[in-house]
Amino acid sequence: MNSVAERFLRYAVISTASDPDSSTSPSSSRQFDLLRVLEKELTAFGMEGVYLSRTGVLYARVPGGVSGETIGLIAHVDTSPESPGEGVKPQLHKNWNGLPIDLRDGVRIDPAECVDMLRYKGGTVITSDGTTLLGSDDKSGIAIIMETCKWLIENPDIHRPEVVIAFTPDEEVGRGVDNFDVDRFGADFAYTVDGGEVTDVSSETFNAWSADWNITGREVHPGSAAGSMVNAVRIAGELISLMRSEEMPENSSGRDGYDYPLFVKGTTGSAEVKVILRDFTTTGMIKRRGRMEAIRDCLASLFPDSQIELTMKEQYSNPGEILKKDRRLVDYALMGMRRCGIEVREGAIRGGTDGSRLSFMGIPTANLPTGGELFHSRREWVAEEGLSIAFEGLKNTLIIWGEEL
Ligand SMILES: [Zn+2]
Image (cartoon, rainbow, N blue to C red):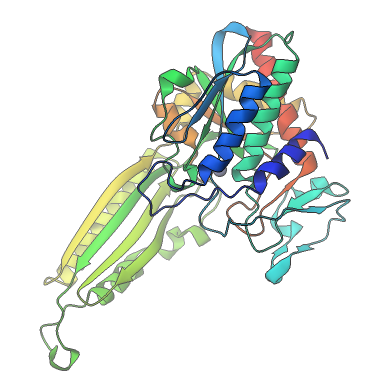
C-alpha cells in the first residue's frame, strides 16, 4: 500500500460520526478520538502552532515556506450520520477486475454508477464490509493533507508558499466552521480536500436555504369532528403535494437545483415539515423561496382555521463569484491536477463544503478531489491509486504556487 492509503486505513477505523441532534461542539465527543491522534502525529512531524480547540478544530503550520500568500488546507474529521459509521472494517479489493463489487447485506458497488471507477481496474479498491460507510469522506482528505505536511517537512528545499492546515468537526451537519478562528488559521486562500473524482476541481457550491414548516391544527374526536377538526397531518400532505416533483433531487442533476422535503412528523394537532432548497444561482434561489411562500399562502386559504408558520434560513452560499475575483486559486489547482497526467475539469459541487462558508468569512476556498465516491453510503469507496493521484495533485498545486511567487 502507498503511504496515503495506509494512513487512510488507520484513520478509517476510528468512528467519528457527527450528530445532527446534539447542540454541543463538536456534536459528538468521538470526533476527539481522531483529532487527538492527528494532534499527536502533527507534533511528531515537527509542525508549528499545533492547537486543538475546545470545540474540536485542530490547527497547525508547516515550518518554512516563502512569504507571500499563505495557503490553507482543510479537511473534516466527522463522517456522515446518514449511514452507520461505527465499527468500520475496510476491505481491500486488490487487482480489481472491473466488475461490480458485492459486500455484505446485499450491498453492491456497480462501476456503471461511477463514471470514474474503471480508471482503477487492476488497482486496489477500498470499501467497507457493507455494514457501514467507509468514511473516505473525509478521512481521505485528512490522510492526503497529513502526508502533504510530512512531505513538506522532509523536503525543506522546495520553493513553496507558507502552508497552514486545519481539521474541522461537524462538516456533515453543516457546522464545520461555526467555531473556526480565521485569524489563528492565518491563510489568505484555502483548499478543502473534500471532493470526489480525481478529475474534479470545484469552484462552486450550491446556495443553500432551509425552509422549516410548523403547522397547527385542531384536535377533535373523529366521531364528532364534522365541521371542526383541522388535521395538521392532512395539511402536511397537501404541502408536499403542492411542491413540484420535477424540482425534487431525484429529478435534478448537473446545474439544476432542487426543493427537497426531507423530514415530516405530525399528529392531528401539529405537524412539522423540513424542506431544504438548493440552487447554484441567486435568482434561482429567490424563485425557490418564492415558491415556498406561495405554498404557504395557498395552504392558508385552503385551511383558514389552521396556523401555518414558515421559517426560511440561509445555510451557506455559492462562493463562485468570490473565487472568480482571483483565478489563481482554481487555476493552479487545475494545473496541479493536470500535471498528474489526467484530464481535469472545473466543476460545481452539488452540495456544500466548509469552503462555501469560509469564502464568505474572508478566505476564498476551492475544493480539491480525494478520489473517493458514493459518499454517505455503505457503497462508499476509494482506490489506493486515486488517493495517490489526489496527493500528487495537491503537491503539484503547492509547487505551482511556489513557482508563481
Ligand atoms: Zn466531506
